[in-house]
Image (cartoon, rainbow, N blue to C red; front, side, top):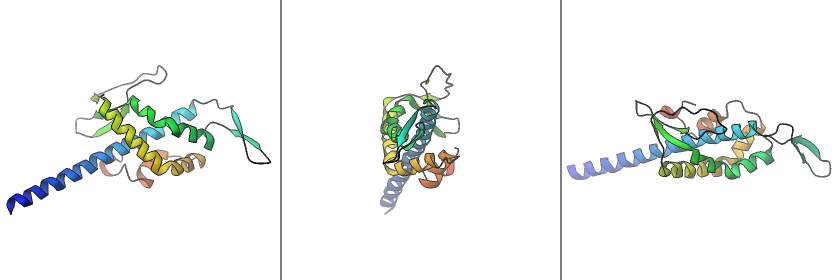
Length: 166
């Protein structure tokens, strides 16, 4: 009897740990998606326009437009190859960009760079994009201020509790 209780406890703990670990990577991917989209929009020619509409077309700013966002989201998960796992002294995990974008300096502390972390983050990114692509578009089109908090905490619930630092 004691053995089966102990085994059930171990299985339960293992499932909870795996679920918590999965939420951490989803939270990290969610935050990275917003960072990457913000960066890409900011570094797109702000003068470029596109024509939208049917019979009566009008020119709108391309950077941050629905068309631009859809194009960015098609490849955004490839950017997860530039992220690594970082753990602070208290065991709290986060994902940090280790690869400089355009010569900017990058500070790395307690970072573990490996292909399994990148794959895990890329898979989590795909999960977030497929589940929340319309919400991401809405956040950008409506010019929501705190997109990370809205998407990663309020909408998805990925970044709650100890992962809530956005």
